[in-house]
Length: 348
Ligand code: NAP
Ligand code: F7E
Figure (tube, rainbow, N blue to C red):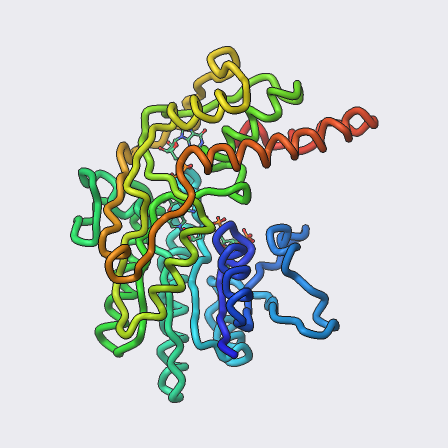
């Protein structure tokens, strides 16, 4: 039985990847941050009490700011594959928490690489996936592929570039099997609620059912290459199954503006967004990434990977999910509960 260790397992991608690997028969270990509330909601479908028989998923408390703790987990889990997905992954937030973002995204990756390097010295050498981002291309003109030069436009993107180059350097210097996936935006009903796609589908669903009146957004003209997260985790795994390590762009090859996403979602939801969407400058970024459009030819040719879910299917899947959540909320409100999840709406 193969073993995998996932940092960031509680996030959108971590939860899809854990499901994917469990279905392939892997024993999966994941690192969870200690929090004052439960943060394993996305894992509920696959989590079993550790006392039950046939458990395939094991969770360990840890944090990528704690290199020693990570080394202990590596010793316990003894993985064949390590997937480093942990990150402060919000671009806008990285301008407010630049130093923290660098510590988690850049130095956090370095801590993991150092631990993997020492672990490999003991004769065990797990293959490693590093979660790179299309944000590294930033202001570079589209289409972007593996040869496009990086031009990062946020502290998050600069930190991802550092992590990318650390990974390349450790591969070349120590002969480690490390792959950088340069993934373009990928979404799902599990997407964090402060990213623009989920913010839009959740708000439209709540507006439709009278649970919310307005949706405040920033730049509607930015263009992104949006795919489905469930498709993208397969590419991560495929990279680690190749005879030699390499770096790959993963994208759909289609680009849409935030306005187009809003149009498509509102149309499907049956809401006239022009009556309820307003601009709030707090959602603009000091430096924006205007156009991302990925060329994933290399992943198609060498990994045999291709996206399955289309843009329209993705939007519908997210709207359907958020309509269902809004209906549940409506039922609770009718039963006398105060409006749920309203808290924090103003800073999203
Ligand atoms: P996400 O939903 O924000 O999940 C991030 C994960 O990292 C969560 O499990 C989070 O834990 C964990 N984390 C944050 N800080 C940590 C720390 N100090 N120590 C340990 N864990 C920590 O992100 P995602 O969308 O799944 O993305 C996965 C990875 O791919 C990230 O590295 C992201 O930067 C990168 N990426 C994402 C996209 C995309 O479009 N989704 C595209 C390119 C690259 P909590 O649950 O406790 O917060
Ligand atoms: O913004 C614009 C915003 O925050 C997309 C992360 O997963 O993908 C993600 O980063 C666009 C930007 O994602 C709002 O200005 C307008 O142009 O959904 P987002 P992102 O910044 O592209 C990359 C690949 C990653 O690696 C990251 O980890 O939408 N936008 N109005 C808004 N964005 C947000 N969040 N909120 C708004 O109100």
